[in-house]
Image (tube, rainbow, N blue to C red):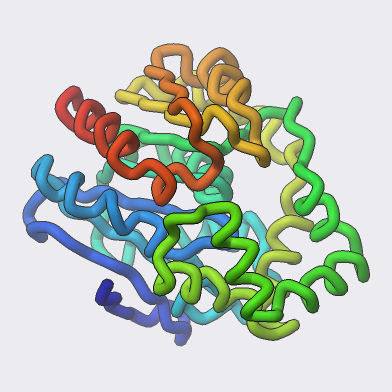
Length: 273
């Protein structure tokens, strides 16, 4: 899948854009350890609904350069502002997954006037969430760095990803691996998780309640990282008018695992906005 690139503050940002430039824009934000390729099966569906898609590789992931400064949650939120300003995206629909949701939902709360609708999967701002075991390892100084050394082994990473997502394309595995290549590149993930204090968003459920746009929340039934109960917590705590759907027999990476099912909900979402 062909990527384009632009420069922000002297850093290359790679992104995939498809659809008619005059159609309403949709911004897609991926998670960890992903890239814009996680949305590969979604692009044609969204475009067929009459929308323009823009999906960046977040800084340090895929083909995008990392920040010079630590890759904190706040810095990624600022990136969304800088990137959308650069592309003259004033009002847009937002689709998020995993860490793309922590970044994107926080951004949406701070810029509600810019968001036309939300399509959310496998992410949470809930104070009740307890980080999964790998996240806790990444958050631990020295231990996180040691684990990153193991994950830098390309073959080991490929095998683990294939176990988790058997149908993942080789190109996508390679793109996801880029962030783990060196101790310097993997610092992006360590910085991000170590900045991920959910106390920062204690006020955000109230802010979410002020977002009165169309919202769809979808989840994999068997997500091992963020249990599907958090789909309903997100609805109950912040987005009571959202439509919630749990995809049976699917895990965390639903965009790759069950793209046809995800696209059904995407079509439904965009037919109703």
